[in-house]
Length: 252
Image (cartoon, rainbow, N blue to C red; front, side, top):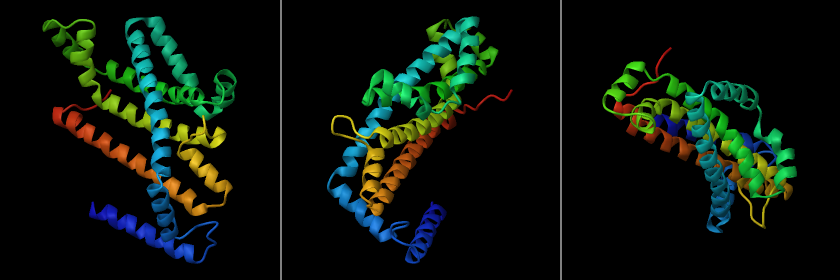
């Protein structure tokens, strides 16, 4: 922790020194960014817009994760579904969500529905890929042992396959979260608000248009801090599950 704090302090010091020799329109000093962040926090602007963006991400991730579980369950049950999922992952997984924005706007309009649609796309495929790998990596001996204890169908999945797949599930959630968070910020910067409200991407775009560069950097800092907070929560979940249970990803 001390090393991390020292690195952050060193980076801020270097930023401040470089800013002394640079126009504030290109790189505002640290104290100006801190003042802008304090102003927007006290005024409630940052909190309101961060909540807006997070709400879209939560909805999109919930739908995307549920869809990934459904597709993976089908793939485990039927060969044709497994081949279809592999094909869909190969085609759609590398496709950036923002590339589908014109279609989303055409189909769903300039509203929250388009944002959620793109987040679902960004979440589903990495999550499905990790789930599929996790389920297929469960040792056959454990599955047989579960059947000996009377587990079949959903009971076998819930009591044997899911616990053994936790490392893959958490890895998928990390990737899905990162893609969803990037997507929602990018989407908000493209078409802004919905119903007079907007998120952190819209905050950055709005202040860039007004040349409030310190506020732009403050918005970027909030985006980074949210990412760090989620990563801390993911690490806590990993310690409470993977490390506590002694589960590791199977090597094949």
